Image 1 (tube, rainbow, N blue to C red):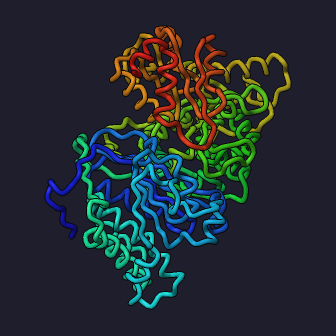
Image 2: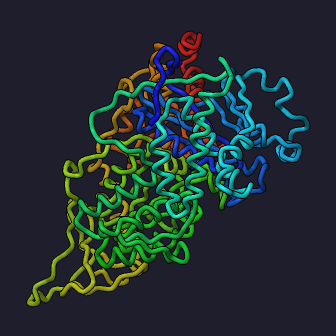
Image 3: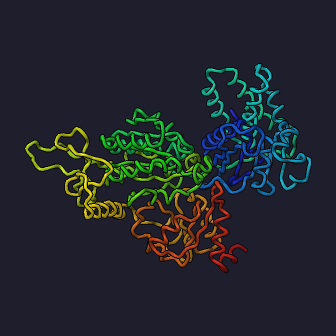
Length: 630
């Protein structure tokens, strides 16, 4: 068991941002995830940001092969992974080169000097060793030969040099857990489970973890190395666990199936960053979830459409390039008016773009990206935990209105983690499903598969094999009166109008838009959607603490918009629309409402920093913002 030293030997912190960075083979994602688990058990609020290269294994020691994991944890609400790291753990020169510019002045650098060989320095683009220059004078620097210290810690286990060095991430984790008074037990239990069939590897990693932790106690570094304590966050009573967006989204999909009392059929093709959804759902067979890994994107969505036609909840997922490939089949689902959940985990583009970097640039694609007039509802998640509720809401809409629904998330939400209070599923209303019953054999009237519910305009869900509901289906236009193929121009106009009106009517069945933070009128509103939620909230919160009249509006239902959104935006003198694309939401808002707003955009593959948005707020509020900034 870890022991915590007396309070007077610990430096108290409200929050801290730690970034682990190294080669893609150094295990930084694993190190970060285990540090996150221990931090969650310590009761801190947290948010994480895994940042890794697209290459499966980039050349070792190169800058484009650097993998990093950032965690922001504190004793109060944490909604972003933090702007600038307070601590950077750099396992090689390339990791230092890539991440140094982001570390706050005066921050702590923990550096493995054993990796700073002449060859590694050259690969990173250093002409001279930065450890021997004034480059690092602005920071606190702890330099250890972590490689050698790890080798010494595991020398009794008979590992090769290569395998022994693989344990250095555990040595580093042990040191950081000592520094921030994190418990080791959860990591040791994880290692016991992970390497149960390889006891030598297990014991070596545990020894490295313990050695790194002990080094903090025994090293004669004087005041150069400190221990820190971050108090527990005050949270609502309940059971919590750390979740990523992909996990919460998968659980939300499964929960929607339970609430509708229907099976889920998930057809998908692997693509970053959407693949974890397939992995998670494949482990949920006991909840009547069937997963199918198709040979390509088109097969994946067609299998889901077939499942919906057959009476299940069809779900498919991808990222932007895969959504493009699914486009024609998505049009088929719109034409046949079948319920279908399409999940888009957005990444940088165009084409295959930036596979492991986050972006919000598929909004046009979601709203407009199909041939013909083919409208569908579009809904977006805001945080990892929010994915659960959004999946349920998207499924409800799909089933009630007999329509495909596009659910937008992104790489940041998919991979980021946060503490999430486990909901009571009994508090969720059931999802009504109306599959048409068999017809009386004596009824001689022809069945019309496109006869509509007068309230929702949804067509009947006629499951194949149901007596009396035999009908033809396909992508060619159908008669509104019979459901048969029709090339009649007036019928096509009527069917196009009906499909559009059905989607527009959903605005009457979604919540009114509320203000996330601040007043419902005033000098300035900052509008966002998706994963910009955290940085906007924190920027607005800081601006309001400075006395600025600013509010935050975050949009979940993007098509159709909530019916009061126009009047809500009109209640503000100025509006900023912040999004991680070149200005797609602001274009839609201008199109619908003639909104005069300022666009703040970012397409670097990295999330917004809080200060970037706070600067925009100060600029937009002019003299008021300038006075507050002083």
